[in-house]
Amino acid sequence: MRISQTVALFTVAIAVTLGASAQTGNQKAVDAIRKTDQEWMAAYASKSVDKAASFVAPDGAMYAPNAPAAQGAEAVKNMAADMFKLPDVKISWTPTLVEVAKSGDLGFSSGTYEFSFKDPSGKTINDKGKYVTVWKKQADGSWKVVRDIFNSDLPSQ
Image (cartoon, rainbow, N blue to C red):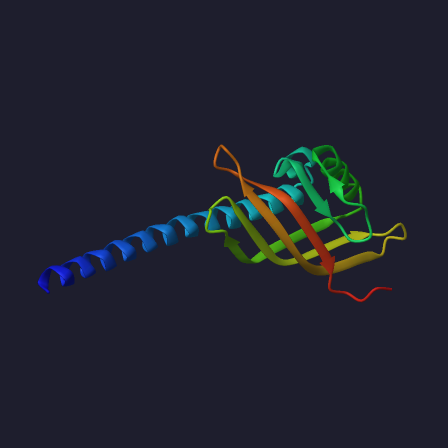
C-alpha cells in the first residue's frame, strides 16, 4: 500500500511538473507573439515598407477589406506601399487575445485597430475595427505572419 501511494504521488508530481513546463513554454510563445505583433505595428507606424513587410512570411497573405488578397512577399510590400502613400496616414493596433497551439509552432493574435488618413479634399477619414493574425514559428525561433485579416466596425456607406 505504501509503495502504491509513493508511486501515485511521484506520478502526480511529474504530471504537475510537466504541465508547468508546458504552460511556461506556451506562455513564452504567447509573450513572443504579443511582442512581435507590437513590433510589427511599430514598423507600420514608421511607414517603412521593407520593415513592415519583413514581419510576413514569404508565403504569407493579407486580406484587406474590399481588395484582392495580397499573397506573397511582393504583394504584401505593394499593399503596404500603397497604404503609406495615403496623406497623413496613421495606423495602430492592440492585441487583446494571443493564443498558441499545443504544438508551439502556430499561434494567433486578435484585437482592435485604428486607422486614419486624409482624403483628396483634406478631410480626415477615420476607421476602427478588428483583426486576426495567424503566426508561424520559424526555424530561427522568430514568429512570422502567415495570414492576416481585418475589417471595419463602421457601417458601410
